[in-house]
Image 1 (cartoon, rainbow, N blue to C red):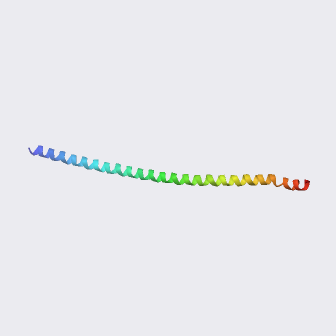
Image 2 (cartoon, rainbow, N blue to C red):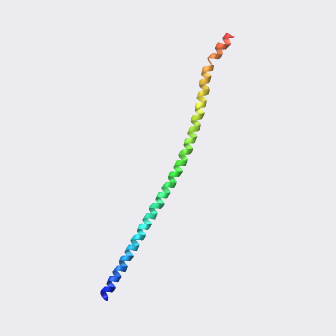
Image 3 (tube, rainbow, N blue to C red):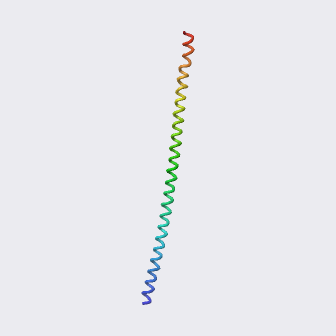
Length: 88
């Protein structure tokens, strides 16, 4: 009877240890999931900022391309004007 009691106590103790280990494992996994979700959120925010920066830079490039095009047209037309004035 005493042996059975010791065996039962050992089994209960072992089950308690297993339950504690499982709880610890669940906490570790949840912590890992939370950390990964936070990292994912941070990366999404970085992507949004980069997209905004990219759009801003695209608009600047477009603006400067228009300026360059206007200057090139002016450089092509400007030499013709004095010639036209002197010929006329």
